[in-house]
Length: 275
Image 1 (spheres, one colour):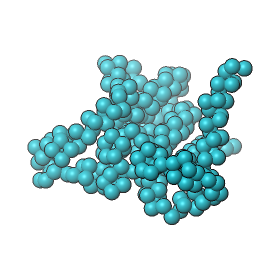
Image 2 (cartoon, one colour):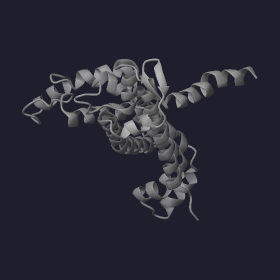
Image 3 (cartoon, rainbow, N blue to C red):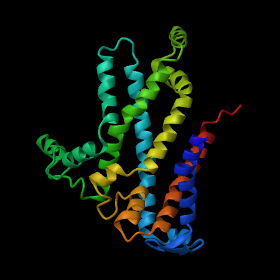
Image 4 (cartoon, helix red, strand yellow):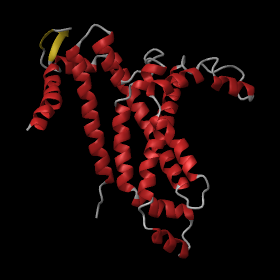
C-alpha cells in the first residue's frame, strides 16, 4: 500500500494533472479552461512545426544509422578469434557512460569554426575554407546526428552482443558446412535471430530521439534560426525561457507522447510474425 500511494502521488497524479493543464490557456499561473484551443494552436505555430520537422528528421536519419553501426560492431566484436575484444568493446561503449554535458561541450569545441574538425580537414587539403558547422542549418544538423550516434551506438551494441552470445553456435557451423557465405549467414541467421532485440533497441532509440534535448541545448541551443530545435527543447523554452505557458507546453508534451505511442505500435506491427 505505501508503494502504491507513492506511485500514485509521484507518477499517476502528475500525468493526470498535466493532461488537465493541456486544456488550459493563459500565462503563468493565470490559467483558464480553453478547451481545444491549444490543439488548434499547434497547427498555426511555425516554431512548433519547425521543431516537429527537426525531431522527425533526426529520428529518420540518426536511428537507422545508429542501429546499423551497433549491429555491425556487435557482429565484428563477437568474433572468437579477434584479439583485444574487451578493449574494443570498452572503447565503443565508453561514450554511453560519459557525461552528457561534458561530451556536448567537447563536440561544440571540436566543430567550432576554428575547431579540430576544420583544422584537420584543412591540413589534409580536403577543404579550402572552414565549414561553419554550428552556423549553417544543414551542418548543425549533421553535428547533432554525429554526436548522438557517437554516444549511443555502443549502448545498443551491448544488447546485440548479449543476444549474439546466446545464439547456438551449431547453427553457424551447420551453415558453414553447407557452404553458406558469411554475408548470407548475417542476413539469413543473425538478423532473424536478433529480431526481438533489434525491435527493442529501435523502440528505445525512437523514444530517446523524440525526447532529444541535452545535445541540442548544449551544442547549438536550437540554432541557427531554430534549425536544430527539437520538441523537448521547445517544451523547455515554453516553460522556462519564454513567458511561461504551462497549458500549451503540456499540449506539446502530449504530442511527444502520441508520437511515441504511434511509432512504437507501428514498429511492433512491422516486426510482427506473419504466418
